[in-house]
Length: 493
Image 1: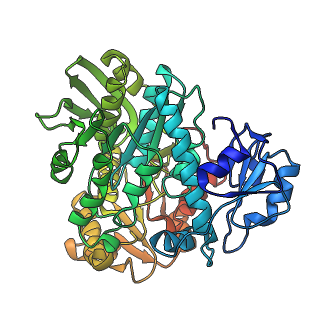
Image 2: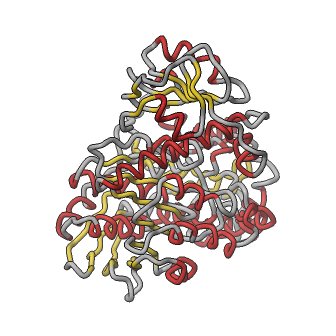
Image 3: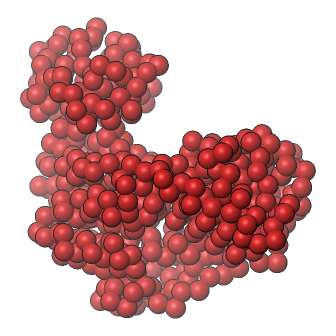
């Protein structure tokens, strides 16, 4: 973060000083985990369901923090933030932090105001803010963009999926005077959420990847999801750039909703930045010719799955806009690495068993992409799809799970292991109804049962995909398989 006094922070967030005259300078980072604080940092005291950050305020200052951002008086120098009126922000704070009195909402609002100030100051000196949204692929694309921009100058991007009311401003506040690029991932669980995040760190470049079924239970329809995802391009300035996936009609239609210049990406012939002659190798890694107004170049993605082509094109468009030559973009895309955990993390054991750990989250679109990757990687080998619940699908849940089960059959996946209760049972039933499947599909109650089945029936050289929404914690299956005695953990296969 840029250096600010406690008095300046109080003015920015509309708070009052407590236990300090305000002259102390905050020179370090902003953290809500007191263990992560560095000297001169600002501790954000967030209340929670189990732990209240206010109880750690004195300890944080004793450890070197310059002060505290708090909702109530603490035994430490602090800025006390004003209460926030009840409403949508209060409800999301309760869901996010577990507090019930709205104090968390007040602290989050203050954190957002502080981030907005810092980003505005840095933008005057040339900071380029890039926002990425979409129903799937946000985190992978954010990681790709960061890797393409880092050679152009200091770049800040969130670790993993820090994309909500807490992680978004926290990431923005990691930007310093030397930072040239700030890459942010924006998520939403309802209308207006992306607009609020975009107001915290106003983007100059906005990327919309796709509109799928993730959280359709909360939005009501894909059109409702598209309306909210489009809030990102609506937030762009006239001199900004909207990077839109023309292969998705709902995303392509967002061109009419922005003042910014539109750059289309995809395999669509109308896309300015497009992939031509896409092929997959035996490990489902894509190669293609990158074609754009600046020229053409060959790309050999080291990532697993054809769905990464669209992510790579979006990242390429951002890097090209910020001054990277097309040859450099292609070369860097050909050497990128997976950065976020449990996203197509492909590892091969010493006995030849390959595990595709894509268990961080799941929606119908991402599961389809993962199944297609499994089918491509397992040619000539037995393939196993270990799948769990896809959450927040509302009334579409039964149909969506049924369709995934049927797709596993159509893709000739050797075995389907469905993990969970009645919510995920339609996936097993769909597989059984699609063809002559009997023992090829099995429904087990939990991860322990799945691990026991796999350990009993897996053979060396099999390929296993593990994927579900976070609530299923299906990564326990992948971890157990890779931790078995006599196996190698290695890196990406």
